[in-house]
Image 1: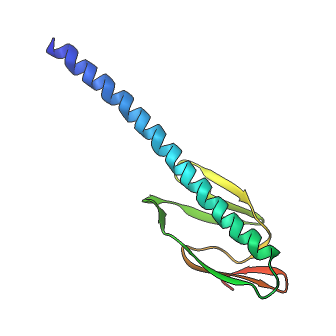
Image 2 (image 1 turned 120 degrees about the horizontal axis):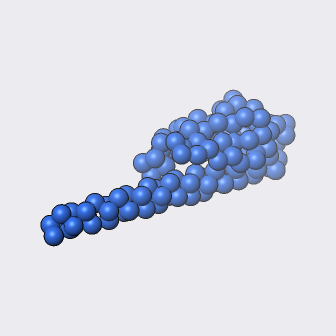
Length: 115
């Protein structure tokens, strides 16, 4: 009887662990998508603004405790968590986004990051 109870506890713990991991992956994906859309919007706004536009944004070192990486390749912004990489189309820009303070400028209708 005790053995049967121990087996049931192990089965429930295994199921709970799998559900927890799935929820954690979903949470990371939602955070990455939300933050990616925010950065995408900032870059689109800068590209549509008049020459002379300048804005400073702060990119956190983690998103709610989850480490992530940013890559800007051609016109694609990629937010990478350990589980997935999520791409976002952005206007052509010069420079790179970094964690911490970033300056976005529209100079002569060219978007410059941290230049």
